[in-house]
Length: 109
Length: 113
Image (cartoon, rainbow over all chains, first blue to last red; front, side, top):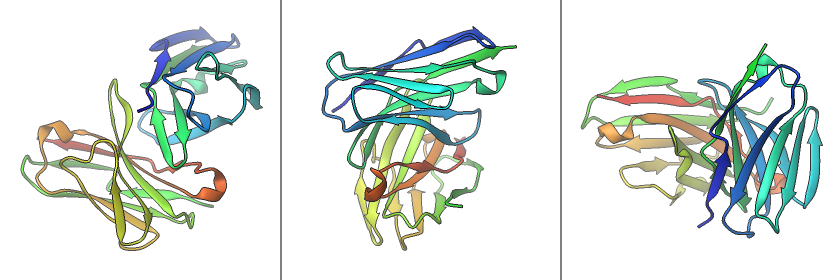
């Protein structure tokens, strides 16, 4: 069964500095990978879905996928205090999503 | 706008009592899911359904039942609630055409005392 690990567990960045989050998965069988944002006590908002090796940009959010290294990352350009949230990565095989444990991001004004 | 709603948003239950969590979607999606979220575990799949009147076990189904009486509605039932079932529960929906992109509800915070 696919396992997904995220790092770091928590991250603090200054407003405007780049934030980088990482995710490693246990095998290369997944179809695609997704990054979600979860504000406190709220549901999950999908940020980026990436299917192929390389880069996928959605506004200030860029995902990088390297299947050979079993690694996907998320970079947040010019983070704002409103980006403070838990970020979850997930591997997707058909209907099934397997989630990582999350990175708690705090953006200091 | 497509949406997934959950009720109640929070609930306090007693050990041994019955709890029903409800989910409603207006996405016209085939698939619906129930997850639980615990600190340090991310989201884990409890049950899912791909058609009305049928449910399937996910990764952690023990202690839970599910019911899908219609395409729009999916319930999670705890027949005998236990302390270990204190968690936040999320419902989601998806379909094949959108590469199974899942749309999540706002969650239900369940506390079992």
